[in-house]
Image (tube, rainbow, N blue to C red):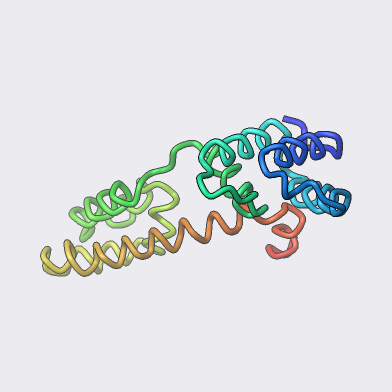
Length: 170
């Protein structure tokens, strides 16, 4: 969809002001500017859905931080990705054929799993280990790596696109 414009930003903030009357103050104009600049890459419908989701699930009565709405935009727009358990299971399964077929097994893994494993040779190394060690120590390390990778992905996706491109050096 189309990226959010100033009028749509005002509509979002108007609905937040109804839900959170404390937002009805003299900072309305700077708030519109800030929100508009932080959501330049998201369509209005997505930001609106994220705000409605936040309001519907809020039990504390505090207005959302921009980062929380960004996070909701990401989770609402992202197709279901594989879970931590699925990722670990796929990687452990790949180690079973890892002595001979480690490159082929690595190529079959989803991108998130490939980023966690880092390179095909690691599958070969793990295939040579005792299966108990693989199922405990390696699996535990993979779970931690999955959480770290997902956190990093969320942080990168929450950046405004121009900032992201600058960080990537484009």
